Image 1 (cartoon, rainbow, N blue to C red):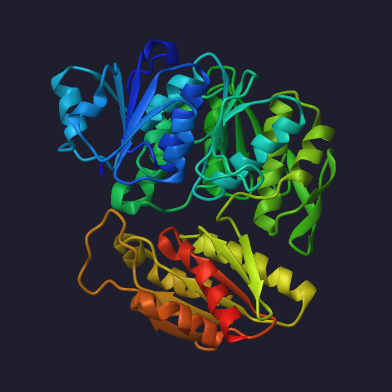
Image 2 (image 1 turned 60 degrees about the vertical axis):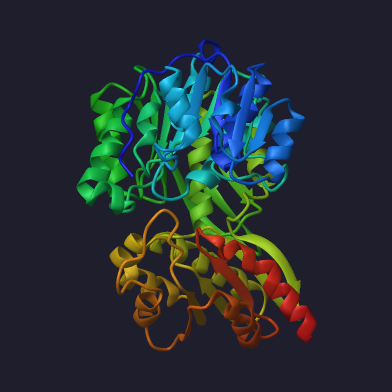
Length: 469
């Protein structure tokens, strides 16, 4: 997968009729939904039918299952993601006809033209911070348009068109596509080594984040995590450009400093100096920091901070971000998208805080590595992260877009988990549910972790536990 570079961004009104190849994806469907909200003619195809396709059809889109050049109809613009291969018949036909072909991020950028765009970037915390910000701004009366890489628990939506002039978007660095955006406000939560299959090394990752800072509008604002050294380097770069800078975090000197973090069940309370107490209904110290980023953006937008704090308390999370799935036989099951060692560490730490307050129980972490390259790069770090669990069940690698690599399996991570943690490597998918159900005891928390199809396991584990109780 090559890195995306900036291309000319046109306003949404210049796109004409728009056809999406793979319209059923979370990001693509969200952009299509907003375009429909603006009265743009939308069509799209996907390899299989889904609820998202049905929703888009209900909003007025022409949707097709399967790919065919005939599906282009009278479209003027075709939108693709990085995953679409050049041989796709619709893409081939679009190029033959000389249609405008845009990467998904360029299509999203077109929707930001004329709005006060807020782009949330960073190695970790993008989806939750973007989701929190959306809900908080809604409570403050801003009614933003938004496009998130996940779905809000309260509405089930990941994107929608608002009536206000603010546009909130998650900015994905994985393939460089965040360089399409020229935001009024940029957020950088943190910068760590990831997506090295694309970037090749950490220096290239940092270089692209620096380019992202350079794309903030003149007179705009950078909101940067004060606890992250690279984010602070980027804050200095922004100051040299003459941008406004707001920092947040637990570090002394942060403009919005978080203090007094106290876990409260599946939530927390803490202070933001100069703002007051904030109560969250989602767990973890990392979410307190995400909330401080939201307050920083709200301050830059001159929002009512009291209403913003109420919105943060009302936030119920994004799907797959420590999402409760249910309880059976005295065992609670959660699901998480965590697929990087830092994210696994954060979610297991939050889960430990929750258990310590509520009962004596164990954490049973069910981890599915995502990508062969990430497994190869970070096997040792994943092993250390899983040491925060009491029991680690490691699945085989979910390859996604990558071909298997000789010798790279989930066993690399299972072998890296320190002694003292009961560790089981279960490479066969059909064996996982029974293995987890046999390990779990009343009072335990089972948490499924990973960016692949591990999310399917939660309901299956609950069903198995119920059948055995």
